[in-house]
Image 1 (cartoon, rainbow, N blue to C red):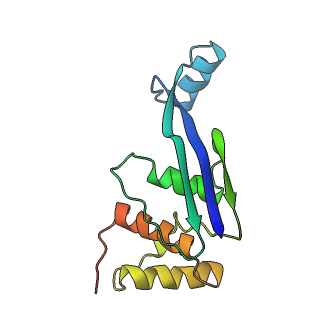
Image 2 (cartoon, rainbow, N blue to C red; image 1 turned 60 degrees about the horizontal axis):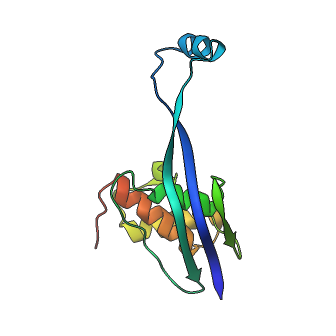
Length: 142
C-alpha cells in the first residue's frame, strides 16, 4: 500500500539579486520598482513512493534540498509544481532541534520527541528528525 507519493515535485524560490541593508532600503527599492529576483530551484522534478512499512533515508550535501523535500512532504511548503499525496497522517519533526538531548542516542531522541509531539512515533517523523539531526549535529551511536 502506498503511504506517500511524490510526483514530479519542484520547489522554486525567488532570491533577491541585491542585498538591502535595512527595511527602509528594501521598501524604497520596492516603491521605485528596483527589486530584482532570480529563480532558484531547491527541487526539480523529484518523484518517489513510500510503501507501508518501508524506511527511507534522505542524504545529500548541504543545499541539496533534503529539508525542502521533507517540508513539502509534510505540508509545510506547497510545491511549485507536481503534487504530494499522503495516505494517513504525518508529523513534521524537522524543526524540533531545540529538544535534542546530547545525553541520549539519536534513536532515543527520535523516540522521545515523537512521543511528546505526536503521541506515537511515525516512521516519516522519525526519518525527518534523523535527517535533521544528521545535518545539524553530530549524532552519537550506542
